[in-house]
Image 1 (cartoon, rainbow, N blue to C red):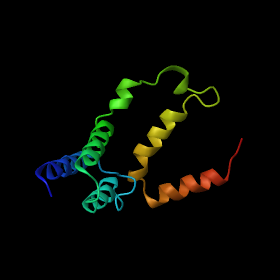
Image 2 (image 1 turned 180 degrees about the vertical axis):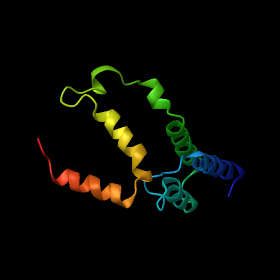
Image 3 (image 1 turned 90 degrees about the vertical axis):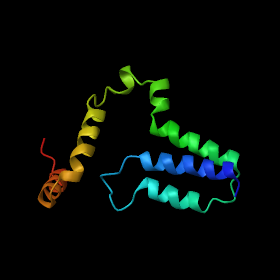
Length: 114
């Protein structure tokens, strides 16, 4: 393996080490899946590996979120203006819920009183 190919693989592994951990599914981590994929990627050229490393870094540093900011009515649809705020709140609370809390939310979802 050439020196540049090793360097490209180091970039990929460094980007994967910086990737945030998934608190919703701690048993399955995105970076672990990609690490297995790139360990067996000896068929990729160094240029392709560098492109993949660049894509990982761009996702890691939110390059597209800063390049194309979302504002206005996209974040607040007329049908449910608080949808995205509620979604983020649910995703932040989900890992810390107890069994009884999850059961209560499930039962509450079955029965809708209006």
